[in-house]
Length: 99
Picture (cartoon, rainbow, N blue to C red):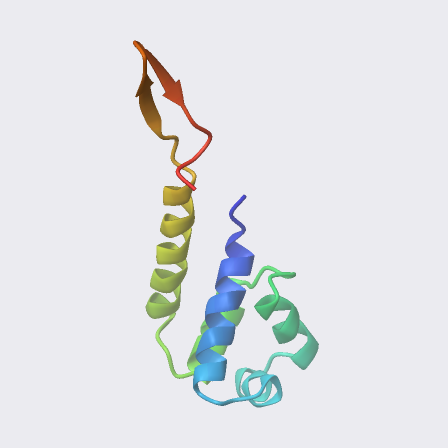
């Protein structure tokens, strides 16, 4: 199952780490508690749109860029779950997924 909060947390963490910044630095810049930002990055909490905007601003990245990255990850996961149809001796067999 795809969990948007996990994908979102992964994308935010990747951006933060690519900038060489700590959770403490970003949480202070975004005015978000360190623990709460950590929970968001781990996919344990859902971020409100206001909080997400604040974190993106602290990371100096557009919200649209983060959402696009999350969308791409979801699309990749969905593509792996698409049933595959194979002809087999006059009948059609559908596998659980392409993976």
